[in-house]
Image (cartoon, rainbow, N blue to C red):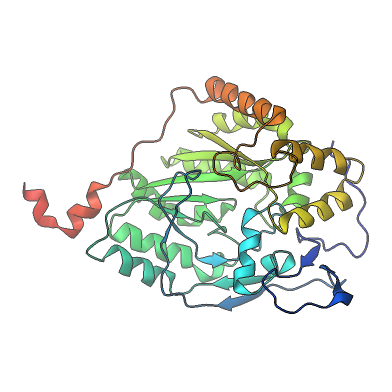
Length: 356
């Protein structure tokens, strides 16, 4: 259905970005390298670089995001989603938003310790913390390092609420903790699903869990009493927007409680990265896809305005919004996750309060 082009020998299979744009903060550049550096023909191996931040819990000031606090155990993401909005943040660490983002992964091994120090501080008030929000907390290296699990263990020990968003079935490894937290209304999980088309998934987000694995993960979480929602994100007109009803119906049947979405936005270097990708993978449809994305954002590939950047504007944005609303009414009516329990944290920290 997607009419994918046969890829040449120089195409980096298993990677999303096929170019490595210059870091916009670099003071020096070389004209011979132009603005975009093609990849080497050999496969680039992933590097894991230890960093030691002083804080881990970040305040989220965006009115577009339903959270106040986030924790990201990793910077950069091996999943390689070509459209990922977090790519641009890699520039702040001195790397490119292109293949550097998915091959140079910064790991924060002291994350759990810093989270515990923060929530034990006398001024901290219980408020749900989002695990991920920028890069996936269950990307492949988590299987070995278990940084995310360490954070969950801290949050469970202190009975602190947490929400998780991921594309990786590795979240099921921590089912023992998640079940205990769910029994006490301390956790919600969102599984991000971009398509039901496995061929599209392999090219668009090459190192994520397969479509089948993600659907199984939704069902497994729901059957174990863990509140699970689906994020259809991002919706890319001309690529996956036709899947709204099918995905909503299917995931509703697996036990998902809600269905969210965002539309694609290609800010900064991501515009060039995505355009290169779509022209190599879908040359016959590239202009159509790019023009429809521009239609969402007032003629641009990206948008940074609160209120519009996640939902878009214009005809295609309105069609998407209407279809999602209809799908929610049809397949998710009457479903909702239980409210977070904010009391257990305070009761554990101040046991004398339970006497009153």
